[in-house]
Image (tube, rainbow, N blue to C red; front, side):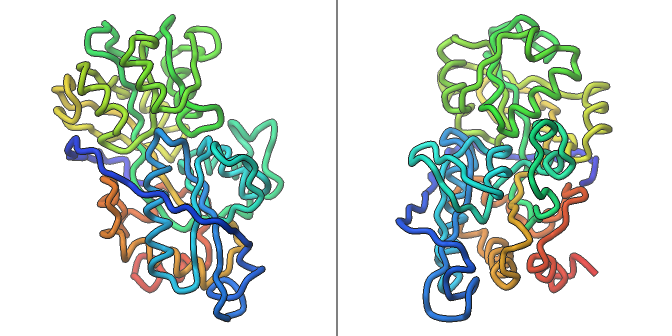
Length: 347
């Protein structure tokens, strides 16, 4: 990904999003259709998203609907999870739906690209418990920029990440991309997230409520811009987004190629009048190399060709031009690679 600054101009409208709810699920190799033997039966797939208060869950539901509507013989179900780390582990085995309990079949996941790189390298949250086969993880393509937004109330007196020492801080759900990045950022500013702050691990929806109620001082969130939870808080309270720039940001970008700078325009949220420089990663779709090549090709093609049908506000950010940014050393699925070759993005 380019280290040049990206600028996002966004309204504060909260887009409604749909979630696909299907009653059955089978592995692609167990049924006929695009992922099976070419018959008339339906291929059921599951997409692991994120918490209900974040962006992954509603956006994933709309992407799943686009796939189900435009790929003959394919239906995609989505469910809520703890997001990136849990999702990457789910590709290898059973995971938990926040609402429905155990899920033993996952073919597709959403994850922050930086966390996926850590999974492949058995680093960070995967150092002590590495995946059985990290080399099997492959990418289909990027969805939207994942912007780190550290939000405080405007009258809190907190003006920088360094000011969070001793504060009550929401770091994000355990195993989420938000938690992983929040810990990296705090450490870059010389703050130990296990001893120098009072850490909480709510979903961002709950974290935003706690912030608005004065129960916590700050909340980290890797979210789209604008983030619905921050918009809701700022409807009743002026907010500030803390900057992540300077030497600390340079250190983070040097250590992790998934990061790049991004400017959130002044006026995005009530009280945030000035432009704020922060860091962004990417929300990316991943699968494993066992997914049928033709099915992977169709999933990739349909998502980019029909992104305009997605009503969620970040749907406009699903762009072919940025599909391959920041993937690092994670390989593309051969089916996705073929699509990008046809589009002239790869040789």
